[in-house]
Image (cartoon, rainbow, N blue to C red):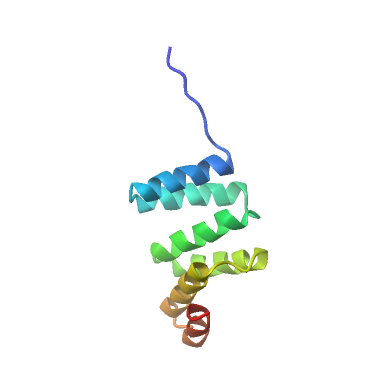
Length: 103
């Protein structure tokens, strides 16, 4: 008999996103990170990676809001700041974008 194991914790969704990233499946990565974010919205690692995935999918409005949540949880890394600047620039917040991109 076959058995199905449900891996539906935030950690497992995050792991699936890593697998999708390695397979270069952006939609899969974003979907898995969205599920992980919904299950664990206070986990800075998940929030940060989800924000980056949104920027890479050109969903800049949602990405900006997600970055704001992320930076309320942690200082982040230069790659988060650069991607945040990218999303701000895409929405024509040029002064803010320049400040974040070059942090």
